[in-house]
Image (tube, helix red, strand yellow):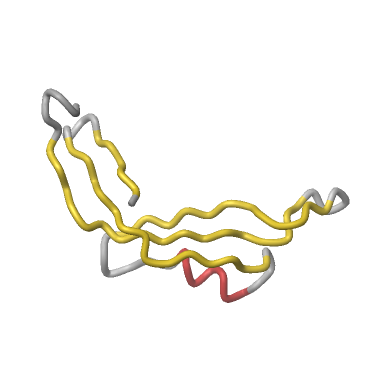
Length: 79
């Protein structure tokens, strides 16, 4: 799960992870994960793999996609 907190709206947005992949940093198919979606999703991208000091770059990107599954209002206890 991933929970994002919106203090202004006083809500928690709950996301369920639907996909986790690792792609090479230069894989042209990797950009497909950054395109618009018809559903409420969040996509997290981070570096992983071997670090190339000359290129100042990691070999791979870890991509985590999560779909919103719930919206939970703040309560005084959890807020």
